[in-house]
Each structure stands twice: as structure tokens, then as C-alpha cells.
Figure 1 (cartoon, helix red, strand yellow):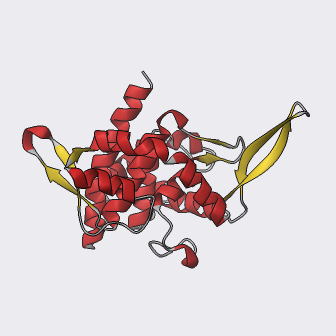
Figure 2 (cartoon, one colour):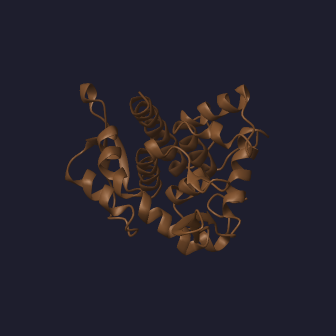
Figure 3 (cartoon, one colour):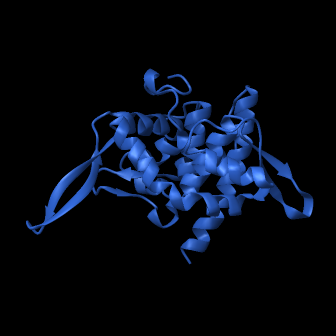
Length: 231
């Protein structure tokens, strides 16, 4: 399996999109970790920006780690608002996630529907009241993403840059145990996931090194956000 090609025609799919698709629970039609989802999706966007050369990390000494814009404005409209935000001035990771996350859920769901990964299904509550539910779209992409994560976490396969980033973000969100029916949860699984959060995977390319560093920073912020949200 190549790095960005679960399906060859979808090489421009964002990690942010795959992240929400993995968190979608087909049995219930819900999304795991809704209480911190906007932080998690913003973490995905920041990771996507870094992978495309649009964001970089700066050590600001006593001010901590700051995120600043880099390169040209991203073409993808989902990434542009965050790039514009950090273009104004370097900002802390927690602030970037909080400022960018709240508007992401709807647009990402719409993209997944457009791609056929999810679809809306009309239903009736109590047989009378019309409602709409999200269901799998039949593309098979979620199954393939889960299989790639399971291969890394359970079977010990060396991850690609993309699968490592996706797995690390899911783990940092605190929702990985929710997937236990598809990815068996164990101490070994947790340990492997934590190592990915810390950027501990083999990757020789410069772009992969940037992703590893950004993932470690984002994962730390997501864990902090989850702790605060669940108090």
C-alpha cells in the first residue's frame, strides 16, 4: 500500500477527512469523541498543513512552541483559514486548535458524503417524525483505513507517513479503545499507539520528519484538551 493511496484516484484526500471517517461508528451512526471532536479535526488540519509545507514549528523559549505559516497559501479551502490565522503572527498550538476547530465538522462530513464514504439516510422516529442519519456510503474506504491501522498496531507492520499520522491522531484523541471490535485493544496496542504519538516511526524523507515533529506537538495538545474537556 503506497503512502497516500488507499484508492489511487483519491491521493488528495486530507488526513483530516480520513480522521473523521475512522471516528464514525457505523453501528450507531455517531462519531466517537464528539466532546473534543473540533480539537481533533483541527489537529488533523494542522498536520495536513505541515505535510504540505504550510505550517512550521518555532521554539519561542519561555513562550513555548509556536506555529507559524510557511510557503504559499494552501489551495484547499479547508486548510486556508488556519493558514491565514497563523500568518497574522505565530501562535500557540492550543490556541490554533481552539480557534480553527469549531467550524470543521460540517464541511468535513460534506466532503465524505461527496466522496461516497458516508451518506445521509432519511428515517422516521417512532414511525412519525422525520429525521436524517449518517450511514456508511459503501465506498469501502473506512474498512481500508481501519485495516491499515490494525496492521500497524496489532500486526506490527511498519507504517507509512500517512497511516502513522492518522493512527497517532486517533490515539491522541482518546478514542482508540472505542474501535476495539475492529482494532483489538491491549497493552501492546496502547504502547505502539503512544510511540506513534511521539513521532517514533521510521521515515527517511524530510517531509516525514516534519510530520513526525508536528504530530508529537499536536498529540500533546490533544491529550491536554481531552483532559480539560472531560473534567
